[in-house]
Amino acid sequence: MKTVRRRRRHPRGMAWLPPEEESGYDGPAVLHLGDRAFGVTVHLDGHLEPLDGRYHWYGRIERSADVVAAKDGGATTAHLVVADRPPATLRLAEYDPWGHVQVSGTGAPPYPLAAVEVDVPV
Image (tube, rainbow, N blue to C red; front, side):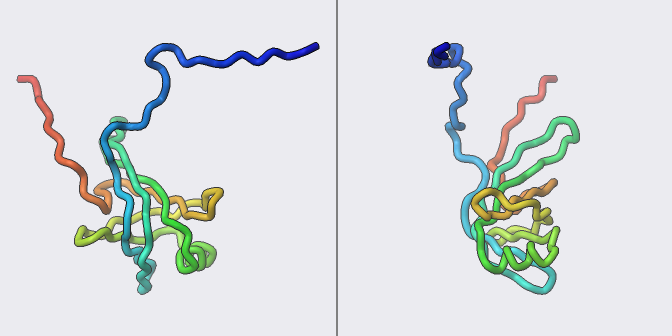
């Protein structure tokens, strides 16, 4: 019996499109692990979680020998600094398929957020 494959079409308006606006942060940062500091490149984004009212940010640190050695040595938390912003605590998670270290944090992210205007009904 021959199987016929049909092209799957997304219903009108249901196809995923990338966001029109840039969000998050892609660029250099400094990772602080104990008394050591490493220059790293990060790719981060986040969202406000309505269930707990906190900002959750996440992403990855590009693979580097220093980060791999720290992660393989048992490091699970660190601080990340972007430019002149205050340090943000992050969790070092697992490696992704390309060898980058996945990270996540809660609260103020290490990168600046765009200002948001909110209209509150009276």
